[in-house]
Image (cartoon, rainbow, N blue to C red; front, side, top):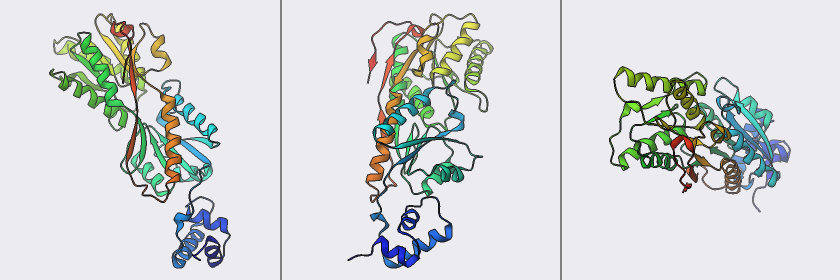
Length: 343
């Protein structure tokens, strides 16, 4: 008969529960106790893989810069799907926001999660800490080597937006993007450039405008549009005849700037956003956008966490990426009444 968890507990002079927590690297133990248990298990040849992770408590980790659902409601929908999936599977969800100046280790000890879903951008040092916790971790709207993730098909979404604008006769299409440290933004920017190449058209790099960091996202997008207009005047060049923005909030802010300058939408400048937030359909004119099932992102994140836990004896340092499909929703901001284009 092989070594059991009871043998390890006896050798380390602790309870069976303490052995389980120590070998699963769960909170609630001193480092001295944890090390004593790990050493006892090593000496006895106990295979810690026998302790399969059973997920009950899961934490939805969101960077503090995404924690303004009123301005950027995308992640509120993702969270809703995540919570719904947890309820269906009898899991206990919690929500934690963090940034580089926060003590993530302390917060994780308080939440005591069995698994973590990281949504959106997060600093590499925080991601490295999550990896060291030795718990199932899934990334949502984010990609990093060695992690399982679920993402929007960002590149395809950008292609749909650009193909739509090309079909409307637009050729000088500007792209308003944010920090390329955000995986989804980088993918959308790549799709924007690739669309020009695939259409056999010349790409003007001066039409790609990045928002300024450290200011509110809608203010930054408005500033980017102001810079595009000023650049055209200073260089005596025509204005962009369309704008593809990295998300709807940015597109709406840029559209307001154009209207304030007396430009007509879509006659002078057409607009396409991304995400299909509620404000997109309610704007004047309504905003053409690329839509995605945001709740499906959250639900699929829970599925991946459970799959990771069930295969805890396998190599977890594997990069896998699940893509959620997208659709184009044409509205008046790009002057079309065509039927929806889907993937």
